[in-house]
Length: 75
Image (cartoon, rainbow, N blue to C red; front, top):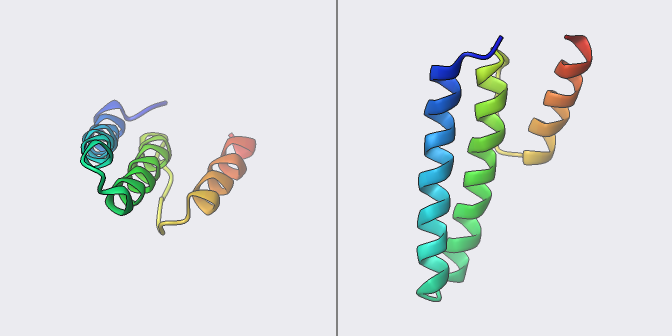
C-alpha cells in the first residue's frame, strides 16, 4: 500500500528541483542544471521507496533503484 502523503512530499521536491534545473539550463548554468536534474531523479526514486515504506538512504540513483528492485521482488 502506498503512503500517498510521503510519496507526494518527496515527489513535490523532485518536481520543484526539476523546474529549477530547467531554469538553470535556460540561463546557461549547465553545471547547476545537471546537478539539480540528478537531485530531482534521486528525490523521485526516494518518493517511490518512501511511499512504499522502504528506507532510502544515500545519493546513488543506481543503488536506490537496485534497492527498489530487490524490495519489489520480496513483496
